[in-house]
Image (cartoon, rainbow, N blue to C red; front, side, top):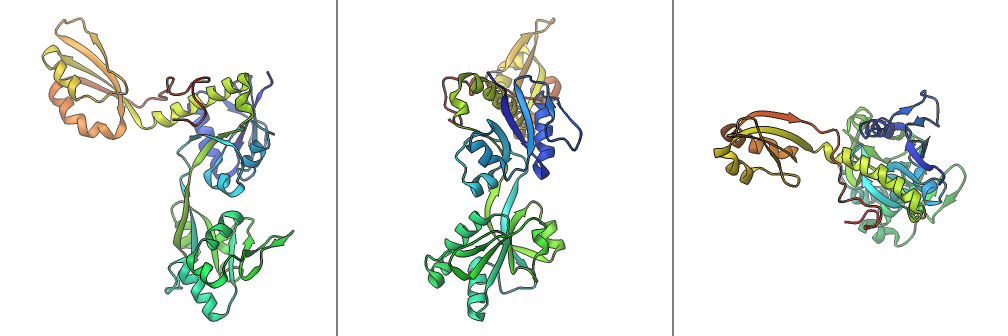
Length: 330
């Protein structure tokens, strides 16, 4: 078979993607300016592109798998298979306005205020489709303007019929646009510090987004490519799941063994091994990280020699198969 073409993102998603691949056992090499790094899997070919482009290119079959943001998948409306929520780069897409607008705390307030003043509302964003849909779904917008689409403006084209609400394509630095170049923005927010520094306040959350692993649907129908894609999926899911788990080892006296096993959560079933002293056993298992503090008092009472590891990966081999389940299936 040919190599599986795997696109990894440039920009704010890049560092997390590279850490994820490294923890999964991959080695990615290349200087900072290369867009074609090497990887220690001869059946994978890597390329680096902007996350905005990745859903469309994978949906069109130019590449097989890739990492992008859920926000960009929704924005581009690309027809791809979502394989996995990678659970990093967690952000919120928000509507924000200048902080000194104390009487504006929602999109409805914003629309009412500008309509009452007879002014055109200008919104700056990189997310043209999401923004237009969001504005048109607002009940105040529907009451004022009906089904008219906001006027969407880019350097190359304009579309839409409602010039009382205009959405301008931003090429970055969106927070800098108000108040001179825009009245409001729709942009991603991680901590809110950037909005704060630019004297803006978020007034509505449009969606939450994380990095996701996506695949071309036709590539998944190719048996050989599907095998390799599912190798990647298994390793990355192992990392995602491993971050939530702890691997614990304890020694327990035979008198306490059954009581410990009854109270010990386990990924499947704990492994029990006799020690050189016939009265003692070693027990090891994988538990959810948030269960550890809850069971620690019990472990102190019933066991000895507690050792705790953060696993590099917990591979869900029974959950992910190349033949028995459809991708993304439960």
